[in-house]
Image 1 (cartoon, one colour):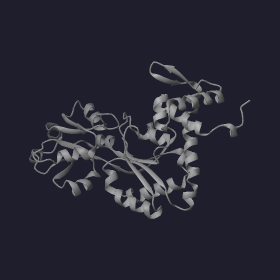
Image 2 (image 1 turned 90 degrees about the vertical axis):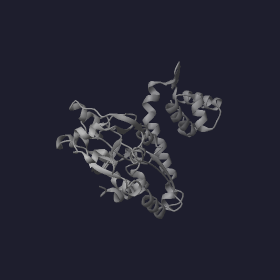
Image 3 (image 1 turned 120 degrees about the vertical axis):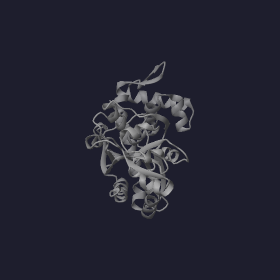
Image 4 (image 1 turned 180 degrees about the vertical axis):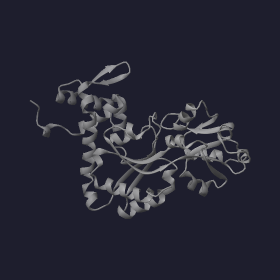
Length: 319
């Protein structure tokens, strides 16, 4: 028979969640700012409580037992709900709220000032953390480290970034859809030629790494036609690729979403925007649904409902 829950130090559950993430006593101790021996003592208490080893030592570190694996999602949900309960006072008197946002850049910068103003008007003294959307952002949403994400997904049927492949516990809403466009300098030699696929592939390209992948739907579409881009430079964001494409006497071109046109008109007016020279059927495979993404446990969180509505009002008519 299990002892009463009142006898369990609930801080131990936070330690358990970190152990499932880090799979290391020393790394967990560093995150908690305690000694490894303190974490080891907590683990012994947890093992006694659950009557299970919870983790076993392997050459690569700790490995969770089946019981621990079965509790991982429940732990994340419980800790997220605990945070929401602790925020209830702030909901009644909106002071000291925290917002953690993961938004694709430069989409983030394009509307950030207005979004901050709206948050601060609703929640005075709010603390806002922004992060570029990356390969670990969905994991951060699951772990409760992020409130919400806004990013482009892909429509190509073979893409690993399609909405259909999001985990079942992730909710989403499409705000608008976009197509990739080609960005190049106003004095680029390609502009003196007929704009077609031959011209598009004739010049070197600046590519970006997308969620740890150096290829994306455009490369799939080209591969289907036996074609391939000449990737001369790979960078980590659209901002970086647009900056490099705008450099004087630079013959590299880059591909980025159409919404970036507003961004380049403000910061890189020397760039022009052209369509990717492909047919309508191929274009449909390149469609980018820009999507709000959040964990299902936040569906009824008042702060998150307000944040979703606010972001939607800023981006719904974005084109």
